[in-house]
Length: 458
Image 1: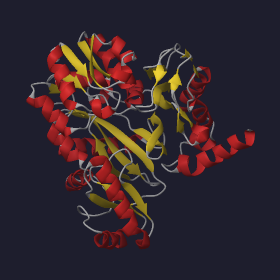
Image 2 (image 1 turned 45 degrees about the vertical axis):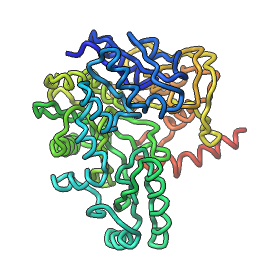
Image 3 (image 1 turned 60 degrees about the horizontal axis):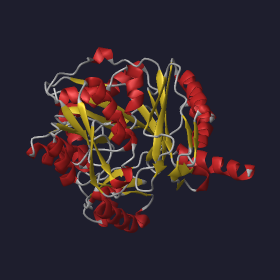
Image 4 (image 1 turned 90 degrees about the vertical axis):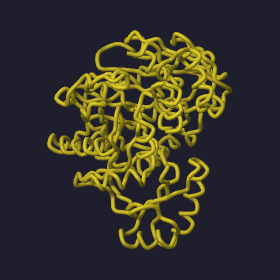
């Protein structure tokens, strides 16, 4: 087992990993930018190394400085958390070349699944359902128009190297194709350095359902209860929950077996998440695979009682999975709300400043708050706006919602504007209560009405 691990992340993600390392008796090394010198993850770690300036390119994406910190402190492994370098194959290879274990899949697997079109082809070849679309990359708008006419509009143009909703454009008709392809390629080139594109039929009125898998080096593969991540704004998840109550036990098992098939097809080792689009008939189509721990892994941990970070470390150290498929049936229902530093009533404008007062409603069964917040800290403009993840577990979905409403009603954060009241409004929404919402509901229906109500109340 490793004696010392460097955590190549910041904030809540780094705190999450460091806490498990402490419980495992493993020494932790934090990295930080000059803007994060007083951050909680720096204070909790056994050692901390500054790797650069405030901008992510100078610090949390500075591969050479991070490797130097690992070598200099004697860290045997690096846990990347999520975001930043967690899905960067170049970084995984750099770790390997320096004799440092990258806690995650191999660099080749990251490459194979990171290219969305290659991943799509691999899944199709191995019997995993995929949405109709191009058989490979599209090279120009004429080719895109031809394929779109075959599968039917609307279609989605997607960056092969994409993620986080970048490099994607929905095209409603042939007349929009030229401009849409040009814009999508430009964005993909700027964000990913790769403008390769592919095309898929746009599935409407669908849910975003994802399945976390885990596979060890011995081939043991399991799936976890699915997560419903359909409530999104600009392709970014807002609320996640597990399991999806609309699925029957038989459908849940079938979807899980499809996810296992996908993991084996990719020769995957460690944990990852298969993302699907589910139509109104509960047919699920492969969308992409995230080759890392997800932000919303917390709801999976709540309904199974499994520490996924601990399992990642054990598998990376060459051990077998510490659980079997029969251990992973959902026990209750969990919901996660992402608390962001933003003014939802004012166009989701980012909010920064000093946290003057903070009360986190800890206590009572069935709750969890993952955060790097503390009273007196400063929320800077350099990084992601997520401040905390509030997670509630109940014996059923109704109980989980009630517990979440209580938690958010008690939570007090002054000095920085957050989306706390937006979450409370969503939880009270009848459509949310029925779990019949789709991946466009929040943005196209709920938010416009909510904004009207907010304006009228002023």
